[in-house]
Length: 370
Image (cartoon, rainbow, N blue to C red; front, side, top):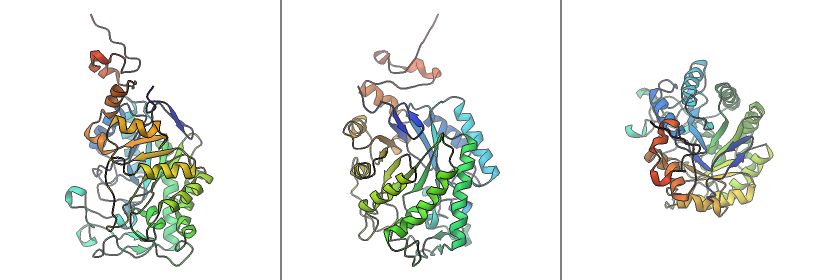
């Protein structure tokens, strides 16, 4: 039996298989609100046969958006628009859907990737960014404003309010974004965080604010919703955040009631030296899994069914998160199930597409004709 297609629980949430669609920014929102593009994209992902779908990084305040095209969840208007999109998707898919709540910090106010991706200045329509310290992402960029006590309180409360909005929308879970050089990761990394107060310096101090935010989110999250965290386990830079430090962070999260940890890496510094290759981040996920003892997702250049199967079968991680491969092939879980001799859920409208030699691929498929 394929181990990739066995059930797994993360907190109160049970997944039918261990394939998760990782968050993928679409940069196609208008004033923080999803558009018809998101309905098409999310619908396609939700009909893929994966065990769960985590929607793209969703900003908890307007200045927390990566770009003008990023989704937000910080007003009644953004909440209503996102609920409308999710409700449409749920008409045709029972797949569990999570939301990733985020704040881009000093990496906010950027142009979309296809516009160059660089910092968008205020004179060109961008906005002032914030961060733990007044240190820019790139040397020639305008530094962010170092967060004051008032900023820390405002952003923490923004995450709490976004949790409440997520619950009203009906998401099955929430992932706090602490990776890829965005605000929570900026606090964790000594590269971006050079504060001299209780939020900077030692690992204990650098963890303090992300843990405060998580604790406040945990207290606001209903018992029937799963709550986890995505981390960058290492900065891939000398003097940056290390995997050993991330294990300690994971232990603290677990003590606060974290249901899962999603392990990525890098993003806080252009000096990073990442050894790119198939499954290059999986050893980090294994280290976090063994060190923290909570359900762990592996992600990063996992492109084949055999790679994903091996990760789960060899206990390298509990769940495999697939992102770019899903955009390239929105039926990736179907094809993986076919290759591994497993079954997936498929919409009734597609049951007739089941190849003759794979008559048991779609669970509960019954086709009649006259």
